[in-house]
Length: 248
Image 1: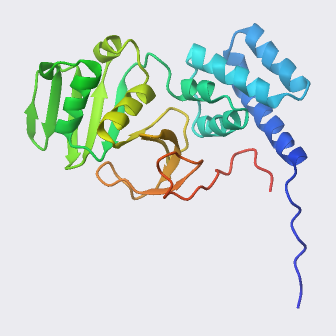
Image 2 (image 1 turned 45 degrees about the vertical axis):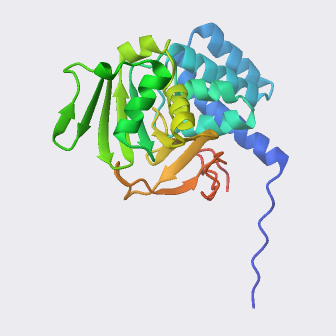
Image 3 (image 1 turned 120 degrees about the vertical axis):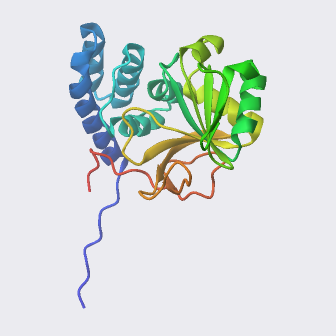
């Protein structure tokens, strides 16, 4: 009988090295798209072995300048910023305010219930909301908020600049959180730079990254796992993502 050699346990030194390597890769990819002074400051942080400070500054600069992220990089930054406890910067990176448009999937509420919540929460008049269900559409030709009844308890909400102006430039995350609290529902959001199957799940208690199955669709959402602990979704197993910089 043969025995495999035990795999060495990851240490704090290993984690610091991983964070440093990830930070160096992301800084090299996005630093040239930032003002020179900000890019130089990030490089100085990396030079003295402060990857968390570097990533916090990088994420803030990317959010401020609205630099689009490549697929998967937003997931990687999300994890790194959680380690750095830079949660506000992390959310601002994924969901800048004001957004250019809004796209939310509301789970656990009908389109009519969402319409009532939009009116109560944000002051959108009933005549400013359009609701589509199958081949039937009710509402103005140019609605401020469009709702599509995908199924009895799944609705898609979309809106643009008029709604952003009305809300004072609220981010998609802010709008999703408000709807969750009012309707006791869940909302699923996408963001540029997340992995192909990665989404943000918002609940009345908080939000976090999740993965959906390849067979999932807008009518039937199937979550395979959470990439971090999501308040209000404790039923999802937590499986941290394998990132590009992960050392095995």
